[in-house]
Image (cartoon, rainbow, N blue to C red; front, top):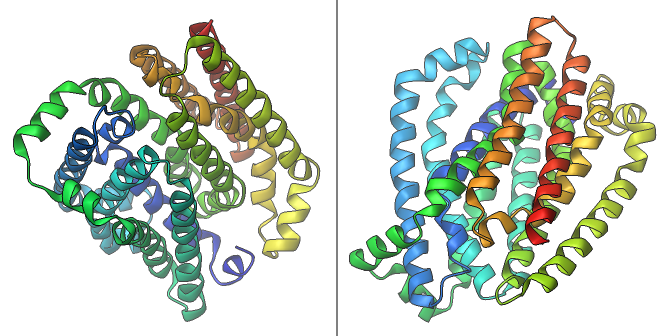
Length: 385
């Protein structure tokens, strides 16, 4: 990132943030959340059928995205004053398919407790993205090069999982079994019915602000926000999602007392880690950003300071959020995600109505979202008790 910020402008960073937000939001919907059922299926044959359903639905959503780009792409980039992004929106459909297929194999790995493979995979994905974006920056390719580098990471993720599949697993996953696919789709209907809206809303809450900020304050401000997300938000999310996958894999067969102990340990551990890790940013973020990333990037550090409560709350919440699905409280999980979405909408609506500055609007967003996360943790504890 310190190299990249000296090779691209905040505006270019903001354009990439908008594109990656679109991919991230659509990618969550790619498998209709059936991927969450892969680790919990009773038999490997059923798990393989669920993974195949995820790949098929990803292909369908990619086709739908292509139609939307054709119909609405011009209007979208005009609204965001982001004309250079227009031709690169056509990379959105293949990105959705690659994201969804990679998710299916990721949860297949979780099912078989191959956490080392998952860790290496995530490292390869992010390493490829970093190398690709740096190479594009040195070549002077601007925002298009950063977008290509971003997509290379997800291609690497998918290719790594496919390459390491045992032959027996590959035969099972790629066998054509239409009747079994339909059966598991009907059996696990709660995932698209409840987990999909919840997951989609959660991703909009996570990534949507970059698009909203670009529309309200311009691509440059979205670039500052994107740098804050890249330097602080992305590592936090990566760590908490990885912990959440392990948490999900360990839940099978646990009784309520054991679940309560595990939940309590996770919350206390991640709260301590989050506060400790955020302490330098609390005190010195603007100066650190200007020193590390170059002149003109201190505003990203100010945004980090405003978002610290939200980052810590999200860091604690994400690893344990699967409990709503595992305990069949899908409806409550969805309702609580709507509460977080309401915090997002209310924050930026207040900022627009009162003509508040960027910092004032982001502070309101951070506070309201933190309260929503804390309330969700409280309700999760109530369920366990």
